[in-house]
Image (tube, rainbow, N blue to C red):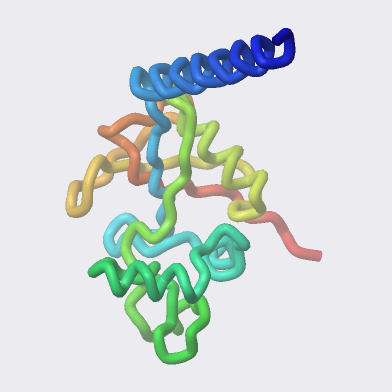
Amino acid sequence: LHQSVSSTVASNFEGLVWKCLQKALSLRGPLLVFPVADMQTYEPLSGLNNFATRDPSLPSKGFINCLTSAGGTAPSTWDDNKDIYAVQGKNETKPALRDVLLMKPGSTVNDVFLTLKNKNVLEGEFVRAEAASKLGEKPKLVSKLDIVGPENRVLRIMTTKRQKK
């Protein structure tokens, strides 16, 4: 009897924890930030190419087949002819807003910079950043202390370049 009561209490507790997490996320979900290399073409940062083509979390060939069978589309870096992830060549059009970062609400432009720097996507020190809220909008300069939100979620961050020895 004691074990069945314990397991019932544990399962109810897990259910309550899950409900609590769902409610917390519904109140303040993650922030989507789109780092780009160019604010005109919205070309992705080249430093994120490995994440876009070699990351183990990318959908498998089987999953992509399920997506396309259901009427969806494959990820932008999926090459249907070769059945692999590949980055577009120099003369090919790069996908706009290919990459997205999930950031905590209240994150600053500097937090985005540090995230990209920690992933070895950017090198050097922060110089300046420009941002927009949507495609086609004229970018505006933003401070590294500005909080990222819907009005400045498309970000281009410029840095000093480290001298390679």
